[in-house]
Amino acid sequence: MPTIFDRGQKGRRALALPELSRPEEEILRAIPAGMRRKNPPRLPEVSQPELVRHYTALARLNYGVDTGFYPLGSCTMKYNPKLHEDLARLPGFTDLHPLLPEEEIQGALSLLWELSEHLKGIAGMPGITLQPAAGAHGELTGMFLIKRYFEDRGEHLKRQKILLPDSAHGTNPASAAMAGFRVVSIPSDRRGMVDLAALKENLDETVAGIMLTVPNTLGIFEEDILEITELVHGVGGLCYFDGANLNAFLGRARPGDMGADIFHFNLHKTFSTPHGGGGPGAGPLAVAEPLVPYLPVPEIVKEGEKFRLRYDKPKSIGRVHPYFGNFLVMVKALAYILTLGDEGMREVSGAAVLAANYLRVRLKTTYKLPYDRLCKHEFVLSGEGLAPGIRTLDIAKRLIDYGFHPPTIYFPLIVREALMIEPTETEPKEVLDAFCEAMLKIAEEARTNPELLREAPHRAPVRRLDEARAVRQPILRYPFLENPPKTQ
Ligand SMILES: Cc1ncc(COP(=O)(O)O)c(C=O)c1O
Image 1 (cartoon, protein in one colour):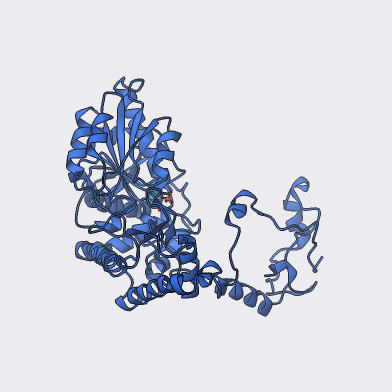
Image 2 (tube, rainbow, N blue to C red):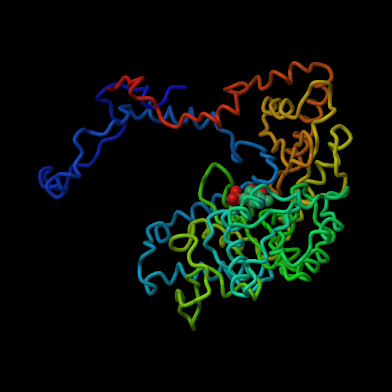
């Protein structure tokens, strides 16, 4: 598809700029000579219809939650109410300058404070920071908190190990390693849960903590979670819960009651900000009492009816994000929490789990289900053994022809040819049924006409891409010099 620079003709304009309010020379004089452009910027020269058609054509090539079902496991691609986008666009929020004095941002501080109180309540934990910009950033911040906690106790040289179930999300070991810990992998047992015997073998005074993805990447809740946290606490370690999968138990269970010391939220999965596409997210961290002194500064405190930023926390790990984190994501999260209330949040997790189990049961007789048990918000099938020579990639590509975004594939690593399906709570039963019909039809095609799968997608703008090359040799800029646009 041509870029916007390949369209139009010299001299075309999509809009008329208003007259200058001052003479041009006067404006130019106000800009120091060394900072003035020598040449005009290279801009596309297109008419308004060309501009609109170009971006409309691009948008049509895109697939999103607003287009259709998006069962991308581990990503909670649910529909997010448009009202919350409108709220986040209110000028009172978007025009706020983060360097304004405290007295002039009382509204924003009260919003952040109120959100913090709700998140603490949902987690059942007394401390919070809203600063981390994403889930993985929350994990890294959590690892820094663990480090600082042990430094303060003079145990940091000894406590170097972070235990990581092999069913954890991939960012967990990366975060622990980036913070300087040694990662020790704990295998899963036949039930898809932490192998308690293996866990016990690795418990000693060198353990700084464990990172549990709750529920884990198989969509399974650790039945022994109380025993696990007790065992880790028993050797003086801390328990980090990756709460990015909170959609599975929102409003029903609190990590604080299960022994979590640190818990991160992915506001951009659970609380009304679309996940993915590189947009802003937020990964607030809730913590148990012993970790409160180490939380990032500033802390937002309420004194009477006023809000204040507190910096005098000598044990704090410092800032992990400028200003207050991704503020507009927090506006949407608070709107979501207030709109749903306690009962609505319980319904979210109830419906998400019901949808996943409905699909799991409908598909498990046709597709291999390596861990066949009640799941939470997602489950993992295997494309292995469907038909000779057919791989999970083929199934995923064929789903595109049926109008569905494919599930996450080849993750988690502990399932061969994995297909990780997360339907979320916002899809009606007809959509779930249509997805099942497509999956069942594809299984039949795999046996009767395997070429159809191997060459899929047939109805997408592009066919099979060399995905490895796209990662290894990304082309990130338009080659103007070698291929100058027509308008130059
Ligand atoms: C279970 C889990 N943990 C951590 C993350 C990392 O979150 P982020 O992509 O915001 O860094 C994700 C991402 O979706 C996740 O699913």
